[in-house]
Image 1 (cartoon, rainbow, N blue to C red):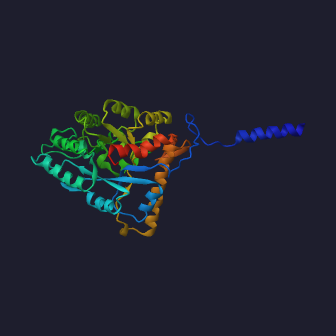
Image 2 (cartoon, rainbow, N blue to C red):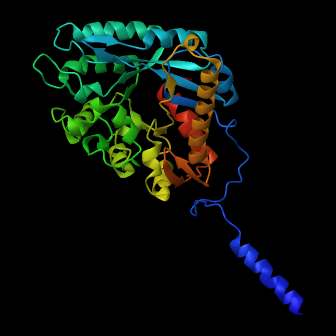
Image 3 (cartoon, rainbow, N blue to C red):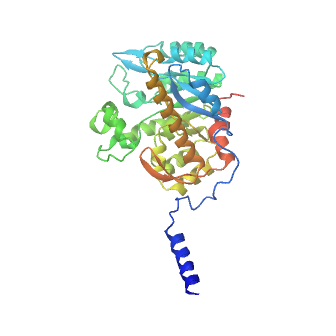
Length: 363
């Protein structure tokens, strides 16, 4: 009898001491049959500027495609772009990559600016561009001849929006930076700490001539409201990624506004998991998957070890984002400890694939 009691007590103690993996308590344990290969995917915000021998196989294995989003920057008033490299890359792999053009606003004072921009965009649309990007240079970098920062709702840009409406071409808009760019850089755990440390030119807190966050976001909202027939994908969760309530407020207000997740998973991970999960549930038809992943070095300038490391890191990064969206276990996303959202396969299919197909008219 004593031995039986001792055995029972031992079993109870061992069971109590056994470590348990954390899970999202508000989501049923994952029992679905799908995995990372099952759901079709489009990374709506990628920057794979140069071809890689490993990319086609990696994308096909993951049942994934991506949109190559053009990057336009100004260096001494000379505009540099990624378009030519993206065009070559996409033409070599038309089953894997879609193209996105861009405008930047340099030369806006010229009476021919709008028409010249339209002519260029028309050529690039004919070459395969399915979307056009506007970047944070609007509001934060590019000025007109009067020395004023050009905001995205500037009336001199309106002919371009009218042209894109007529063509049925949507816009992806990275307007403003996260709100933290206008705050002191004093929290190493902030998911944007590294970026602003390495890119101080965008740390608006130390650059008082840059308009306020509120000013730029207000101009963005005004632009969306003035162009209800233009479908607009607000990149990086609309630069409001640290408060999904603010994103929700805009989605409720602007039926032509959509959002994507690129480079803002760290902000999502810092918020309450249940709140974020409910956000994805409510706006499951308006959210798209984006990563902001890419490369900037030609393959012939890299060693085999560097290529292998790059591939391994890319796979791990895509895996973490999948685990966050689909799983329920605890994990670390961009340095933030959180719980997976446990989104069901129907929502995952929309976020990863269907919403982008519908938005960009890829059918």
